[in-house]
Image 1 (tube, rainbow, N blue to C red):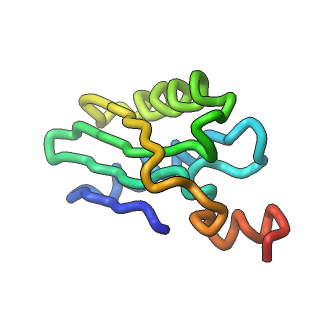
Image 2: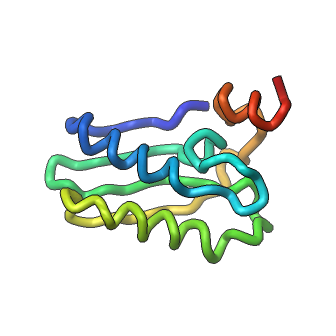
Length: 109
């Protein structure tokens, strides 16, 4: 499942994706973007960013730290006026949501 991207600014959207790629699940050596944990990126013309994401499981030990780390890193993008992360577990994350890069890295392909 690829993330849904709603944006009219491809340059800033790419900066968002690049920042997300610096955040790693602490138990899996792959970034959150390649893991398929990002369900939606919504960047308004006013530069308000909303990211809908999940974790590998509702019991993930990173539930307290990973979203906060991601939000902090996204706030480093100076063009953004606001950043909001929403966590969901619907649909449930599965390994099929990982990119091909992640699947190769983890030995699934």
